[in-house]
Image 1 (cartoon, rainbow over the protein chains, first blue to last red):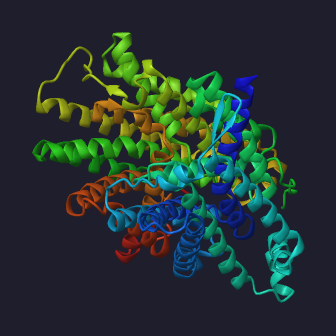
Image 2: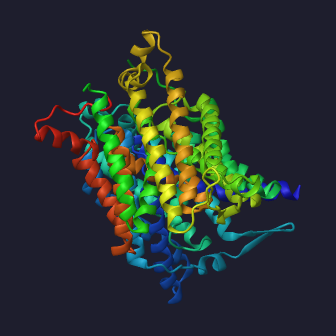
Image 3: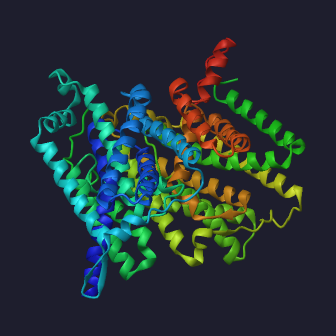
Length: 298
Length: 322
């Protein structure tokens, strides 16, 4: 019973993390049809930025709540900068090319950004320890839960609700839905697709950086953290259906719980299980769980 | 001379020159070329799939299977003969490609790329967590023997190099002939319009399955040679960045010709080691920039430069693969 509860909560925490890294990726794919490898760089930049800025903030002894706000702010600034540079400076040149070619373009950008991280922050590892300590712990029976983990779950849930509200209830969300459905018709209707692309990419970049920023207290911020995030986010997004935010949420929950179960019951298959689930889902639902199956076009 | 034999003749000539020149080269360049040609076999496999419009982001699966087959047989099997090792690697990776092919052959485009990625990551996860397979550190691969002959010192490098060269030549020739066969020639129509092809009575999935097995086998042999060349295997051989590297070289080389795989792979390894020497901290910036420039200005890859050169020289345009 205790194990079951531990699996459930661990799974939820991991799912929150997965959703945070997957939502930006799925948004960009849904709108722009770009499988964005630089998402890992956004995550890494967010983590570094947050580790340093928020670390300094807490060292000065400023009020705690502001530190958490600062994380979000750092992520937004980084996402805005990186997103604009990449979309306007690079990806714009490759629109209309084969999807796979664009993946490779983002892969090249990812390689470059990996070294840019090294140039800016050096090979050192950064630890942001204050937020975890500030958030404290909550005892549930004999289990000790970290307050920060609970916060993460709440934050991811709020983000999911917010994203779905923005898509379904706002004018901007409706425009986006039209572009996702058919970009040519959207352009013919007078929607400025170029602007939609830029804004979407920047928001996706902000979400990626946000994932890194809020995860920074839980990990050692060091070189190479973006590499693993990319494949994890790909797996989650592929399971849920690429381009679907509800799919990303479901994918994150499935992967999170499966991994937590593996960690507690059969630790040898911990890494294996994520991709096994992905392969299994793709076998039965090649388009992922949430995507409509498109007819073959001649 | 017919159209078929001229490129073959050029290839054979280039091969003999490279084999002889190797005697005079410094050992670092010999091992670099050995590794480059081992990886070129994988790229050759990627070109086969690329022609059918498929880009696997998990080809490292077969690469790692080949490499680990060699390492495990070498360590636990008590067999050190290079031909036994390579054959075992080829058979195992072919079998793995045959099995996964039943699934992979049903997918296209990005879904194909993702599923193949997932499969290679499953192997990666299994390797990392299995102590008997060396876990994250991997393990050392002993130097092989060649039909009972055990070369010493510098000869060891050269013999392996010549063997890789011979295998590369044989694979290049076979793939070249395959591209000229009916099954090989059908890859391009697969990319253009599958439905049209199926209406003509061709099983597209069967065709792709065949291509997958061929490319998987090549990747396995490449991985086997890479393991022998580096004398070490580790789980990173199955990681997605390894697969990404192969796709990178394929773009750099271009899918236009068989020879491009070898030239491209050599250029890649060479650039990588130069960049690593000159810019130890920032060599990835350089590689990324090379990739971007290639995609922007040479979308057909380095291979297309040969074609342009040949047209400059007023020879008949190259028509190597399609």
